[in-house]
Length: 121
Image 1: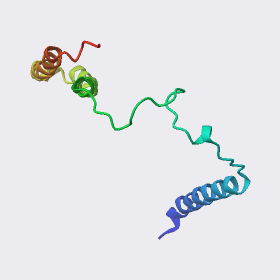
Image 2: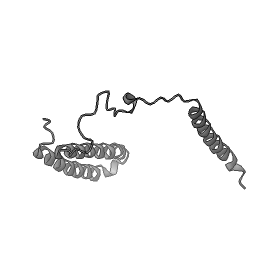
Image 3: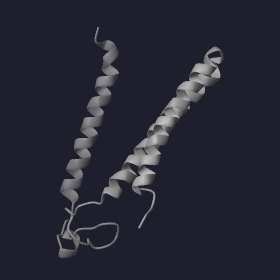
Image 4: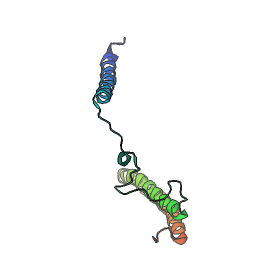
């Protein structure tokens, strides 16, 4: 009864053993010598400027919203295009649904545009 699961169990045992072995060997062979340069904060090859807990501008969040809206639009339009091509009898309804969806997204774009999220200072 459990025979079909033996290969999966062996694979899991191998993966866990491999991970533990690699971590153990790297811990044994490490040559860590802490210095002030190694302990300093590192951000994109430049020294950190200011505090990490600074307040962000509202424009940062508006750009993030714009990115999410664009992602949602892309994720929903690709399967819609496939369904639109395959369901010839329902093309009118599918087109109306997509136009409604794009109109809702356009309201989001207009909101962000009016708030100035598309202008970078």
